Image (cartoon, rainbow, N blue to C red; front, side, top):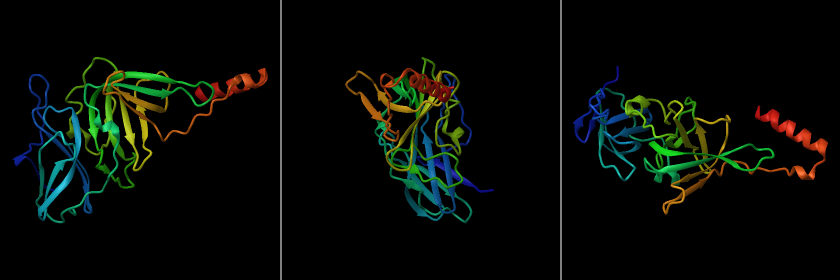
Length: 265
C-alpha cells in the first residue's frame, strides 16, 4: 500500500476530520489525484473555509517530496507530500491554463441563472435566483483529465443555495471529494453551476431544482443591480432561431406547436 505523509505548513495533517460544537471543520483537508506520470490535480480546503482550491506544484526539493501552493491569491499556505517508496510520481502536473471571470465570485454573493426556456418558438429565459454557498475553483489550473474520467474538465463549480439554508460542513469537506472535480447538488434547496471545458468557449451547466428538466444555461449574473454586478454569457450555446408564428397559416401553426410540445414532453 502506498504511503504518503501530508504536511500543511510543516504540520502533519491528520486524515480524520473532526468538527467542533458549532459544526465547523477544525482541520484543513487535501485531495490528491495522480499517476506515475505526474499529478492530475491537488485540491485543498483550509479549516473553516467555504472555498476548495486547486494547488500548483511549487517545488520538488528531493525525490518523493513535492511542495504545492494555492493559485487563488486570497489563500497563503503550503502543502507538502512525502512519498516513502519508489516509484515516485513525476514532478509535474497535468493541467490546462483555462480561466473564467466567474472565479471572482465569493461565498454569499447573490446569483441569477438564466435558463433557456426552449429552442423552438418561445423566446426568453427562466430565471433562478439564489446565493453562492460553496466554491470549487480550478481556474488557471484546470485538470487535463485522463480518458478514463467520465466528466469533462471543470474550471469552476459553484454550489448555489436556493433558500436561506446553509450547507453542512460535513457534506462539503474536500476529503469527501476524492475523484470528483465538481460539487454535487444537495437535496431540493441547492443546485450546482459548473463552468466546463478544456478551451474557450466554455460551457455553463446547471444541475438542480427546476420544474423543466434539461434546461440550458444562457447567462449567469452575479450581484445583479449592484455596482459589482458581473454577467457572463454562455458562448457555447448555439444561437436560437425563433420562428414567428404570425408568418404561418393556421395549419402550419398547429403543426409547429405540436412539434414543440412533443420535444418538451
